[in-house]
Amino acid sequence: MRETTDPPPIRSGSVWRVPGMSALLAMSALGFSGYALLLPTAPLWARHGGADEAGAGLVNAVLMLATVLVQTVVPWALRTLGWRVTMIAGMLLLGAPSAMLALSDALWAVLAVSAVRGAGFAVLTVCGASAVAHLVAAPRRGRAIGAYGLSIALPQFLLTPTSAWLAESVDFRVVFALGCLPVIAAPFAALLGARIDRRGEEDEEESSDGPVGPGRLILALAVPSLVLLAITTPGGAIISFAPQFGYGALTVVIGLFAFTGATAFTRWLAGGFADQFGPHRFIAPLLVVGAAGLAVAAWAVLAPDDRPIALVVGVTLVGAAYGALQNLTLVVSFAAVPNRLRNVASTTWNIGFDAGTGLGSLVVGFIAAGTSFAVGLATTAAFCLVVAVLYAVATARRRRRARAEPPAF
Image (cartoon, rainbow, N blue to C red; front, side):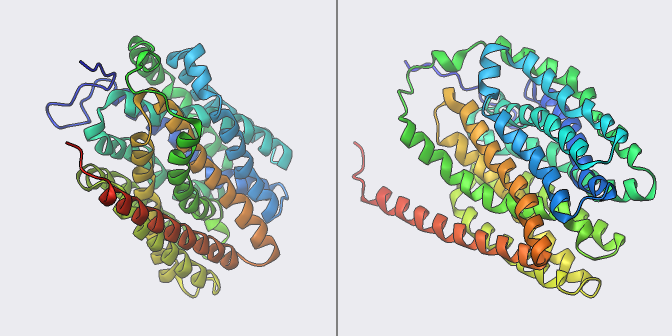
């Protein structure tokens, strides 16, 4: 009889009461609070120190570059150091350096702090997503990813729109102090890590799944990663540069609340649809929704302060696609690999997410420095449309192959 390492099914149907889930959600909420507070504020701090648009764009680009580089070694750290030690170290690296920003607004100092925080963020993202697969069985994993996504998106909904206002209206140092919140997540990381460590190295012992060729693995994970890259690139640009779109503070705050609120809601909502109908049918249409929102936002940015409603509508549409596609692509990534490779799936997904966020900050920042933010947003809209067409074609081919295969008896 086949032996599986998948977690036991949840009898009550609720993913919120799964053992270890409360620690995961608390760790994620506190960790992403520190991340959300500084994502728009750190570039503003660099501008305060004299950096231009390109220099400000480098701040989050360096954060995400460090994140992506360290994400590639997180699976190794989990195997050698264990979940508990790795996650505690990640929370400290993400939170503690925030206080150092108060010492200098020079670009080199802000970039150095961003690099260290990126290492901690790498641990948080890979471990958080992978922990969902360790705690919850596949049939309900979409809902579990939705709950996990809500714990990530709610802090961003509350803090991302207000952090820049708080920094400029009160004091940057208040935001830097609040950016240390991930340090408080260390005890929850210890509890979650101890629970997963007790499960042992079951993934390595699971031999019944059979070998997976590297080419097939790369292809299976590259497709959802490309989709994620397409939507997180504009998402990262909006989060990083919304205060610089030329609109007043009130419009920017409302727009960012709309963006992060739509993200939180659709990331949670998409989980149930993914479990019930499968994720593939929603992905291409959502990319088109994101492209439409970016086109509207680009049109609004062409006339600063004249089209505030259009800006809010545009970023809301982008936020809806941004949240839902995060959930759906993670479900696709976990379904594409055997259980023993779920840490690899989580790492690959997070690299796509964070690379897109970094590219949004870097590429749109450089385009804006040479032309305008409207051109930068329009470029990302075109990217979304191209990926939507590619995914729709790939999905149609997969369905044709499935119909052509003879039924198994």
